[in-house]
Image (cartoon, rainbow, N blue to C red; front, side, top):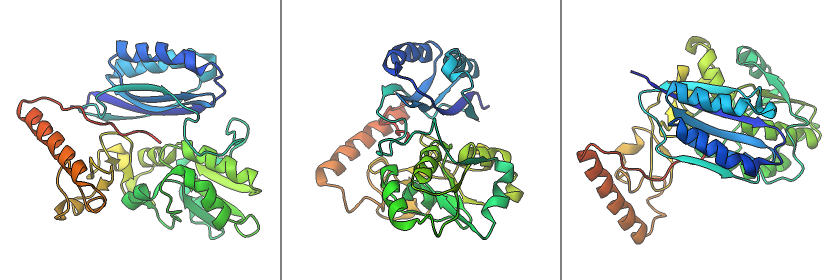
Length: 307
């Protein structure tokens, strides 16, 4: 029975006192048996949490009690067990790191497009559709006809935009990301660069997969998420990918048939980059994981950091 709520949330809003908010927020999560990762900065809050329904509701109510976060929205899905085994509440320079000074989504962003209207927009011949996520995420799934910037991290996106996009040529640009947060900054960046018609998917891929029937969907594949589920499908059901412990690459069932794949140790994407010491360390950790399984316990390893 699905008894855990997984809630992805973010909001760009000035929080000059964000450091003082960290410990009370951490305490509220712990009191309500909620784990996950929450990032706070002067520009707002971002993260994903998971726990019992009442616990997640309590944390959201606590956040919304702050007038600046009163309209904070969360994208919820459900699971039989929590994808997180620890809690992290951290301060950051940016709640999603782009590395460009002066970009402020609280003052200007592109035009939001509801999931119900997204298909019509992206099928228009004069629209350039761009996936703002990292290359390993695009590899798992993306929208039909989307351009892959082939970025290793979001900090690479400004260079891609400067080199590959032209306001005189690309009159209409539509962008999307997992939950919407990266597009907030990406659209703000493009508007600063002189692009005039910039659109982004409201609520991100997760909201699209939740609301748009699979029969009408223009999404191909699965959607990478930054938690223990690794990927989700339509209706936000857990997907079919696993994750390489060594390099954090999402692995398909076919990838795990490759001789380079060794559970908890290596995969086809990292086997040639690992040192002997790393392989030895990962092998020892995997031994401890297996022993914990045999005892019916959960081995707590590194968590996936949201970005």
